[in-house]
Image 1 (cartoon, one colour):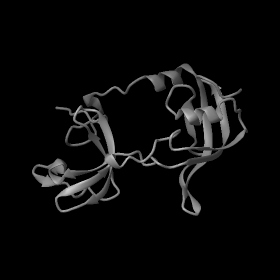
Image 2: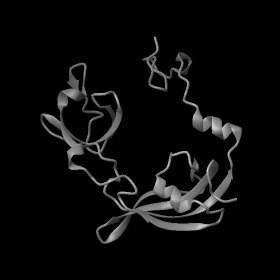
Image 3: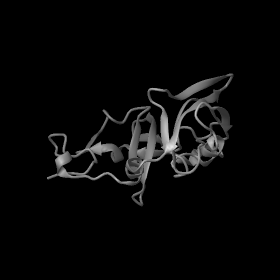
Image 4: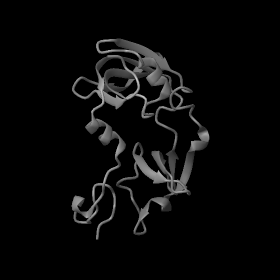
Length: 184
């Protein structure tokens, strides 16, 4: 069976990027933890899917994606200084979570979710990078197809349903459930 729309695909691969004179390993999908997705659903980069389309179990692949085909160029305007007051909890700066190298869920002024990486914590501001971590990088994939099959009804349901939150899901003393919803 060949990789095509609505097939469940499992791949193993190494993802590397060029790091001056060598390649740096960024991600590895293994037989124990492969990348599994439904082909043609828009969950993968278009250029990635184009490179594996038509392959079958046992086929090996090796291809590169330019920044334009992947996560775009690094945009300097996406690196911004935010006042430390943005990161206060009960009037105190959250120094436990706000550290160099941490990636934080945030929201823009329109309520859209963003992920930002802390580049530096200064005396009055936190320098945040809202570029994708792989922006500006040429991605090199090398791997093998380990499974291709028709999607079952259960797999389709799991991929198309949104999580259901209820207070029955509460996991901690603050009565906050695992979906991030507050419970009373």
